[in-house]
Every structure is written in C-alpha cells, then in structure tokens.
Length: 233
Image: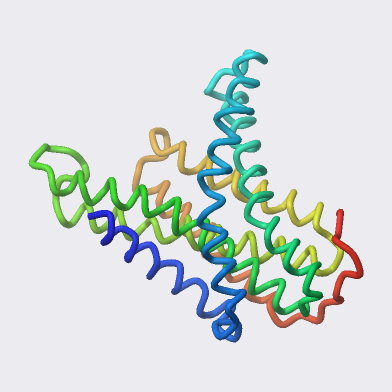
C-alpha cells in the first residue's frame, strides 16, 4: 500500500509540474529539487513539533479559534521557508536564470507535497482495505478521498513556484507572506470540514488550489530580472 500511495502522489505531482516546468525536466538540478523538497517535510514537521508547539502551550494558545489560526499560520510559514530555502541557495550559488528559479520552486513544492500527501493517501488506502464501516471503507469513497489529495500537492507546487518567482524579482519577503496566507486559508478550509461539510470543504479547497495554480502559471513567462544577491524581501 505504501508503494501505491507513493506512485499516486508522484503522478499527482507530475500533473502539476508538466504545465509549470516541463522545459526544465532535462535538468538534473530540477529533480534534485524534487528530492530535497520531499526530504524537508520531516524537518519542517520536527521544527513545528519541537519549537512551535511547546511555545504555543507556553503562550496558552488553544487549538481552536484564534489559537488554531496562529498555529496554522506558523506551520504554513515554516513549510514555505523550508521549501524555498534550497531554491534560494542553488539559485544564488549557480546564478541560475530567472526561469530556472520558477521551475526549481515548482519542483521543491511538488516534492514537499508528494511526501506529505503520500502519507495521507497511504492511510486512506489502508482504511479502505479494512472491513470496518467508515467513510473510507468502500472503494468509491476511498477513490474520491484520494483524488482530492491532488489539490494540496497542486497548492504546494504553485506557492513555492510563486515564492521563487518573487525571489527572482527581489520580492522574497512579500512572496513568503502571500504564500503563507494562501496556505492559512487552505488550512482553515480543510479544518472546517466539520462546519462546512466534507464535500463542500473539498470542493472549496480544490477551487482555491486550481485558481492559485492558474494564477501562478500565468506568471511563468513574465520577464524577470535576475537577483544580484540573495533577496531578502
């Protein structure tokens, strides 16, 4: 089941990468960015668990309402920083052209989304295999649940491509803020399934992810200036 989950997540990631960065597929560095993007997932999760969660407890932040919103915001920011960091390093060290910054950002985001979502897809596959009466206990409901995991991968691919695009123009800080707020919105929608209903929340999440992806896609061929130094904001 784990291998199948990885293959499904990889297919979802590839679907997002083809329109954004297919011209970079022949570059070894592009695929290195995919691998690095996957490897930073547990690092980002570890930082969140060991640094932010104890701090949130110390600050008395509840995991509901505003407290939950702050946690989602911090988690999104940590994820974006770790996703784009290797792109900034490679882009600055190799003086990569701006189009490569965009492609490397998409690759790192896709790798991040692939690793994170294959865990959830694997869980859905395991639950569907069990003979218990749960929302994921039939092949049809499992297939729907798994299909909707495409949209988080799409969102990760798009936001990191956007941050890299912004960095290539010297707007790293603004790019990080926008990407973090987008993931905050998506996190609120996903956590709001109890209020919105599972189907409505999934459809809303998918709509936001697709709109985000199309917006970032439109930036791909815009003229960009190469940063003369590692951009700070």
